Image 1 (spheres, each protein chain N blue to C red):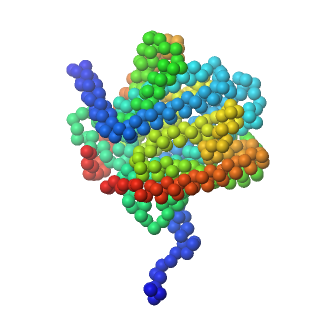
Image 2: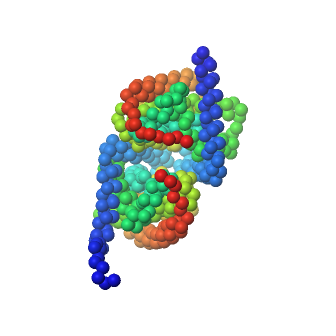
Image 3: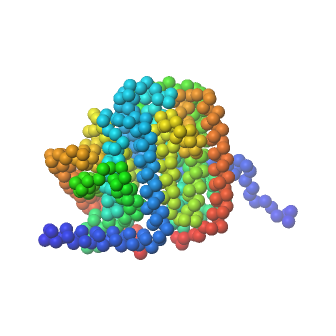
Length: 266
Length: 278
C-alpha cells in the first residue's frame, strides 16, 4: 500500500513537472533566456573563485579543484529542488496572502501539491552548468558520477526540508516571506566558500540552524573519500529534518485561517 | 484665454515635496515589519563572519601583512561595507518595474502627474535609507567584534559618503535600464542575474579589487560595477587622495552615460510597452 502511494506520487510528480516545463516552453524566447541567463550567471561565480585562487592557491588544503566539485554538487542539488519542488519557496507568501485555500480543495497531499506547483525554469540552467563544470573541470569516472548523483539527490532532499521548515514559520508569525528567503540565502551562502575555513561557532551553525554542512561539505568529502558512518549520518540528518519540516507544516496548517480571497487559477 | 484662473500651480519646492513624500512612504513601508528588516541584515552578518574566517586563513597561510595595500582587517571591513551598501538597495528598481509590467499596474503608475523615473528614484532612496541604517549598525558592531577596530579618517567618511551617494545613483540607473527593458521583453530576471554577478565579480563584493590579478583589476576599476559600492568602501577603509580623483571622474562619467541611457530607454519604451489587463 505504502509502496503503491509512493509510486503514484512519483509518477504524478514527473507528470506535473513535465507539464510545468512544457507550459514554460510555450514562450520559447523567455525559456531560453532564463536557462542560458542562469548558465552565464553561474559561470561568473566560477570566474570569481578562479580569480581568488590565483591570489591564494590553497586555503587550508582546499584548492580550486575542490571548489569545482563543490559547485557541481551545489548547482545540481539546488536545480533538483527548484525543478521538482520550486513551489516550496513560495509557501510563506502563499500563507500570508491567504492563497492556500486553492490547494486545500484537492484530494492530494497539500505540501506535495504546493511544492510541485511551480518549476523554476532557470534551474535547468543550473543543472546544465553543474554537469558542464563536472565534464570540463573534474576528472570523470563512473563511480564518481554515481556518487555525485546519489549525494546530489540526498543533499537536495535536506535542502528541500529546510525550505519547508523555514517557510512554514509563516503559519505562526504572519508575514515571513522575506525572513524565510533570507534564511535560505544565508544557508546557500555557506555552500559557496572553501569548506575548510569553517570552524568553531560557524561550524556549529552549519550543523544545526543552517544545515549547509550536509549540503556542501559532507557530499564533497564523501565523493573524495567515501566513509559509511558519514554517509549514514547524512541520511539520518535528512530523515530528521524532513520529519521536522512535515510536522511543523502539518501543525501550522491546522492553525491556518483563510483570507477569503477569491482566486482564479488558469 | 487670459481670464482663465490658474487654480493650482505648484512651485519648484511643491514639485519636489511630492517626491520627498514618495521617499517617506517607501521608508516607512520598509521599516513597518521589524522582523523582516532584521532578517535582511542576517545575511550580511553571516557573510562578514565567513569573510573573517576566509581572509584570516588566506593571509596567515601565506604569512601576508598586506595584499594590494590592504591588510586583512581592511579587507573584512571593506567587504562588510560593500555588502551592507548593496543589500540596502534591494529590492532592485528593476524588480518593481517588472512586476508593474507583468501585473498591469504600470497603466496607473506611468500616467500619474510625476516623472516615472524620479518616482522610482525617490522610492529607491527611501528604501535605501531604511535598510542602510539597520545594515550598517549591525554590520559595524559585528565586524568590530569579529576582526577589531579600523581607524576611519574624516576624509574617508566624507568622500566615502559622497561617492556612496553617486554609487547609489549608478546602481539605480543601471537597475532602471534593466527594469525598462521589461517594456519590451516582460521578464528581465535573466539580465538581472547577470548584472548581479557582474557586481559580485567586478564590484568588490566577494574579493576586493585590490586583491584581483592586475590585468583584471585594471579593467574592473573602469566598469560601473566597481563604482557603486567598492569605491566608497575603499575610501572609507583606506583613504587615498590619488584614488579619489580617479573615482570621482569615473563615477561622473558613468552617471552621465547611464542617465542619458535611462532617459532614452524610457522614451523609446513608452512607445513599445503593452499594458496587461489587471
